[in-house]
Length: 383
Image (spheres, rainbow, N blue to C red):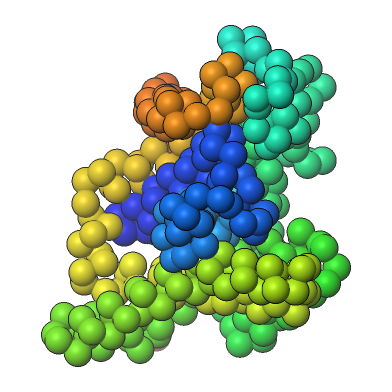
């Protein structure tokens, strides 16, 4: 399933991850803010501890990626004529060719942008590796045993690959037991906060997306009042977007004050904010496909362009951003160069790698479907 709105939403999320990493690596105040610590500048506090954080909400953007993947892949797989034999090889090509190219690019940045830690560097940058050997590259290329932090965003692809492998199970659960699947997802996510299990945190997010995708027609029908385009629908939709933004940024807006008062983080509040943020992401996704004003915003050409290069931007911005932070040191000038350079690199990577990988994956899927067509059903015997 291809949707301009969802592609643009993915592009906006990729840009939020870019802002998260550029600011944390080049502006010390933003790194402090990512740990819910007070910052001297009132402007930093306003940007980080308010709904304005939506523009650089990196972790929440990755959660959106997971839910979107569940939604889109399940929508496609729900077709009665879906060919699983074509899905797996095409999916492997679609994911792994850009990943392998991104790992090679990461190695190149280690050569061109030497990573020598200085006292001026952000602690975020100083804690990252300054060497990238062949063994680490192979580990990042396969994703089978986790990833290194040489290319910071690459960690999430491990979960994307695992979900892609388990997609038939997700589709079956979404189709056969949607309510139980949603309840189990919430329970597992709550358990993840208590157990510190990333598997229990991330894998249920794909299941939430799968349930939404498989039953989207019924969900969209319930949201038809928002899609109507009249005054009532506009007011409800606008309120929904605002609520979604507040929920997604609730941890930054409220948890900061809770932590400052209590002096520590609480598992109870962590659970609550995790579920609130997920609810906001789900609400935003639903409105992106139904609320006309938001759909028009998501069809804005710059956002559509971001959506086109979103995967390339996500894969390539990390090593360039960190490399520039090492070489240039902290400062707003570094931030600007990081953002502009990352966008330019993403465009080049899209046309040089991702676009061709996508074409190859579609060609492989089409070839399999045409070469191994299922035998036609026998004609019914005449009476």
